[in-house]
Length: 149
Image 1 (tube, rainbow, N blue to C red):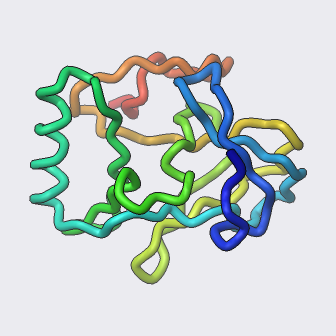
Image 2 (image 1 turned 90 degrees about the vertical axis):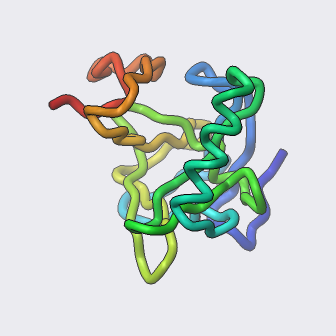
Image 3 (image 1 turned 30 degrees about the horizontal axis):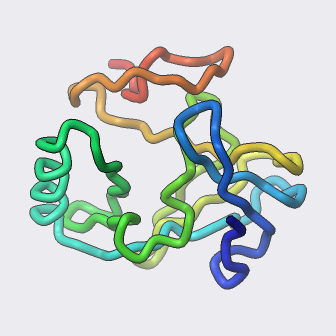
C-alpha cells in the first residue's frame, strides 16, 4: 500500500518488516536532513492517551498502540486518522529523527536513505518505564527500546 503524496514529498510504501509486522519503506532515495513525513492522527489529552493505553493493554496485545507524545499534556494517536507514519518501527540506530514543531511531530532523515530501506526512528522510551525488548537487529542495539540510565 502506497502512502498518499499529500503526507510526504517522497514515495513511501507499507510492507512486511523484519523488525515488527509492518513497516514504512522508501520507494525513492531520500537526501539527508529532509522532512520525510508528519506523524498524523487524533490529538488527545494525555489523560485520554493513558486510558486508551490501559484499554489496549487489557486485551493482551490483540491491538497495536500508536501513541506519540506531542507535548507535556498532549498525545497524537496514529491509530485514529493516521497517515502511515504510525508504521515507522523503532531502531537503536535509526535513519530518522523527530522534531516537534508548532504543534506537530515531524520525521526528518538523519542521513541519506536508500531506495527500499525501511524508515526507522528511536522511540526513546523512558529508562524507568516497563522494559520493552528491542528487535531492531542493529549492531548498536541496546537490547531494549528504553533508553539506558
